[in-house]
Length: 265
Image (cartoon, rainbow, N blue to C red):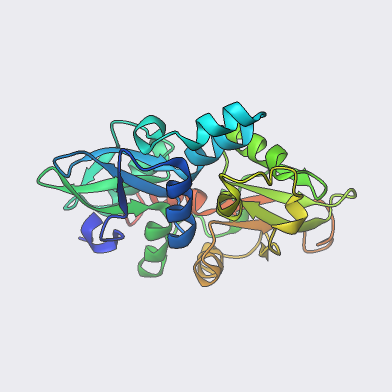
């Protein structure tokens, strides 16, 4: 049976509790990851800081004093504690079920109480090639709706929506609903600590990677892995330039893996 240790990302990308907001943003951006494990003095996992934690306070600062206060914040203040952990020897079906049921993006993998890696939704999606999913198309698992913003929205406005809606990406659309791009928390991270909240998302977005609702989940997984992204924009094949039908993300595929009776359970 495939274990969590077989699929986890290792070694752990970590920091101390005294790491500042700007240092966290740099680490997340340079490593292109969505979370950092915060270590305690004994080398154990004290908590996790996600990219959404970094973005939340920074862009909501509206004056020089509050911005300075945010810059002085540390990992110990921003982290979610205690971290949600899973044993390295646990089967991957257990990891998929916990990620889905507890609405998590990642689990800290431990062995003998010490963090040895992280397992995220994208790590599990890579396992798709080794089994067959009962529900075979994007339409079966996609989210029939999307969190979007106009291309004239500012970075600060986009970050506020991400924070309030608890999402890591927005689909950027034109006035007529046509999909223009996607902007993610990772795209915003390099701006943390600066004064660029009034820049437009159109300056930072990247082209949307689209897929049709009738495509297989294997095709979706291949696209996600090929482009190293976490979501695809689902478009109507008869009207690809109209408002998108929705989004399919790595979390949607993991939810299928977590279903009772799947080959991973």
